[in-house]
Image (spheres, rainbow, N blue to C red):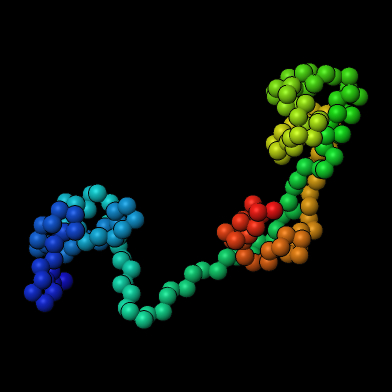
Length: 166
């Protein structure tokens, strides 16, 4: 390759030295630069550089996402507060005792039983296993009508703004 184009001298885009040899295409912090051999150590030398786009050239296609079968979403049952309280009372445990057994504070158990807190899936599984109860259900029938979204696209900023607004 000729290092000069129409009288212009090619220079390393990092140190500015004149390039007497073939410049190395180096990716530095996400940008591809033409560098000398010494400065190529500051990034990763690229074997092939994406060709610069011509004005008016069509955009490269983005690969389509493969549609995977949706796994049923898991969620905590609605009446979790009643189930946990009844199971705890049936075993004769205090809130403090249950909290110790699941490695949580008694205030967490109190908040769950009063309905002020819904346990996350991890905590719900821990309580399920300890007390031999069911707190998590699989919600398989999420259609696009139920969620307000089509099956193909994900949430957009507008969707999030609508959720926050409600």
